[in-house]
Amino acid sequence: MSNEILFTQENREIIEHLKNEIIKAFSETEQPAKDNIALHECEECRGVREDFANVKWQEAINELLENNYDKIPLFSPQAFNYFLPAYLLYTLNNFDDEFSEVCEFTLYALTPDKSWRNQNGDISSYWTEKFKLFTFAQMNSVYQFLELAKQNPIYRYNDASSIERAFDRLKEIKAAGEKLKKLS
Ligand SMILES: [Zn+2]
Image (cartoon, rainbow, N blue to C red):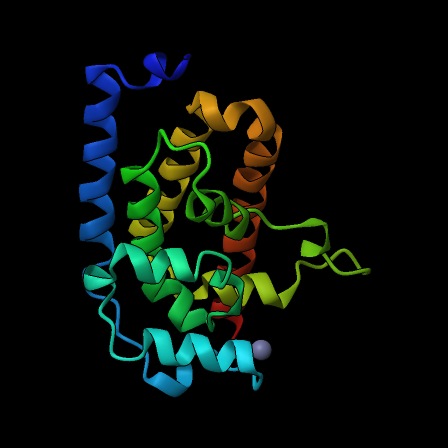
């Protein structure tokens, strides 16, 4: 019902604009070799390697993403950087589908959970590694994506505060990762 608010012509244009930004920002990321798609040895991760081997993110079909809606956390940092845009575009193309698991889990994958800092208060390397390869333009499109998701009435009901938290945490994670890069 309140979806009408989001899907005004103006908002549709914002969504289309962001889709183009994503396509541009991720146009030159390097495709991971099959072994580098997921680094863990288990059946689930092996399945992810099989499913995404030799897939260009621009050519990832809906069925592949739907079958792997909850697998984003299993991607290596390189594969996360490479395949995330396919999930972002799927979500934006299905922005009014409140039952889409791909949309729901794409948002989860961008929402650092409470273990994002370890007991010493340091940001967990799991998260700094995840975003280490992201360029400024790529991070920017992720932030814009979260901003739009926050405004989406169908997400807002449950998730406004968690999306806001994700936004703040990702900024800190990226800043920490950049600092580490300079030190190394
Ligand atoms: Zn595994």
